[in-house]
Amino acid sequence: MAYPLLTAVAALLLLHGADALAMARPAARRGAPARCTRSRVAMVAPAIRSVDICAADVQALAVFYETCFGMERSKGAGCVEMGFPGDPMRLRLLESPGADFRVGEGFDAVALYLPDVRTAVDCVEVRGGQVLTPPEECTVGPSKIPDEPIGTKHVTFEALVSDPQGYRFRLIQRAEGARRVAKLVYRVTDLEKSQQFYSELLGMSVLRWRSNLQSTPLDISLTMQLGDPAVLNGATVLEAEGNVPGQPVLEFIYYFNMRKLDVGSAGAGRLTLAAAGASELATRAPSANGKLVDAVAEGGALVQDPDGFEVRLVAN
Image (tube, rainbow, N blue to C red):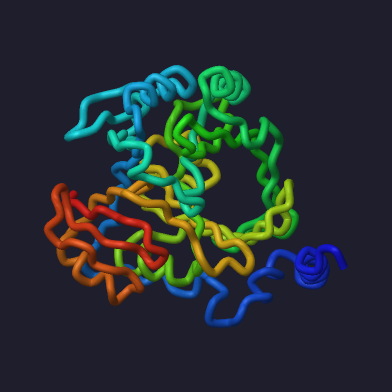
């Protein structure tokens, strides 16, 4: 009886397979991908432009990203922007005193595709970062979206590290293909509400939805990925990952029985999305479990998603 939750979940898995965790939740909160209606305003899915990284020493952090991840820097509006050649996605490094921001557990990770994960991990250790999970082979089971046969396995080689400021990075090996930002990962308390906000309001599509109960290492969670299917150019999500240049995806993870999140402070992890009708979408955020923070904020309208993460909406 030392681990009643794990025992209960294991029993459910034996009885019901990949649907076990979804069945364990109340019907109104399962987060099942029941609705994918797009907003009438956002006829084209919004593009993921950037994510904000607050830092006490922007220049030192930029050197860390250059040295360990192979990123390149450029000058942005009031910030230093980091990214990979040919990849439109940017990390916006914003100068902020250490006491003025906090990286919350809700901003789970920035996932990067790199050609040599071990070398990057060695660099992280030397340059003042932390290795949270050393390089290892990870396996996930079949998805419900897209519908994959029972027994399907997807294998990756990856590591989890943090930079000197505490931001987490999931490094995923891609021996072939360009370095790029693969996805931005956030923890959420309700997948259905997140889907309503990002899919039904903003116009993103559900690209992947799965239970992680069949993953190795074991992960008692559900995952939903949202993005623009147009960037796949007809390829499947799996074929496109790491190979098709374009947008990263948003990945939302619900951990069993999670009801409250620390989303951090001072805009750490804030998304910037370029969307058609950005101002009108912002005013409609409350109808999709979000909140309008500032309709005319500098650089674009500012809203909060259902968990309180800040999203800047700009015209595309």
